Image (cartoon, rainbow, N blue to C red; front, top):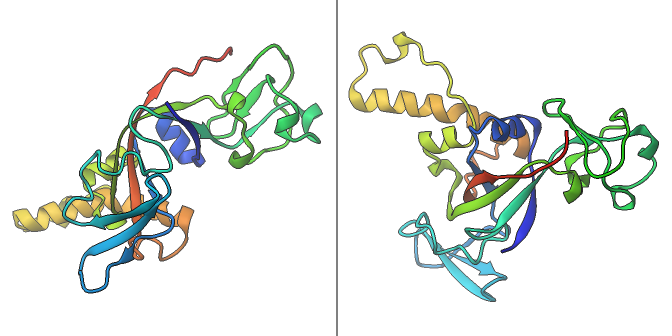
Length: 227
C-alpha cells in the first residue's frame, strides 16, 4: 500500500468532513498528446509503466486500466490531506520539519486538535497547505477507483460527488421544456457550481480548456488524534 498527500482548499475540506465529497479530479501531467492520423486517440508517457499508454474515448473511463499509472495512487492506496493550518506561536520561526506533535488548528472550520505529547496554543501564523506535515493531518482517504477522462465529461452525479451543491433551478426554467431540455437544464445546474470552483483554483478559462484529468473516487478511513 502506497501513501501520498494531496492539497485541498477550505471548501473542499469542509465537504470532505461532512461526507459529501467522495471524488476529486486532478489534471494529468503532462497532457496526453494526439496520435497523428488517429482522431480521438492519444499517447501519454507513463513513468510507472516506463512506456507510452493509449488514452482514448472508447475505454478511458473504465476503472482498472490506469490503476498502476496514476501518480496519486491505485485502489487500496491512501491519500493524506494537506490543508491550511496553524500551531503554537512559539514555533512561528521554525519550519514544520523541525517540530512535531503540537496542537493544530485547521482554518477550514476552526477545529483544534492535540497531536502527541506537547501542550500549547494554536495562536501561531497561518501555514499554507503545502507546508502541512503528515503528523498534523486529520483526514485520511483510501482510493476506491481511478479513471481517466476529459474534465467536461463530468456528469451531474460526479459534480455532486465532488461535494458541490447544485444551483437552484427555478420552475420558470423548466416550464414548457421537453424531457431532453429539462435534463440539460438540471445537468447544467449541477455542474455549473463545480465549474466555478474549478476555475477559482485553476484559473479563468481552465474549464473550457477541457484537460484530461484523473478521476479519483475515495472513502475516508479513520485518522485518530486526541482533542
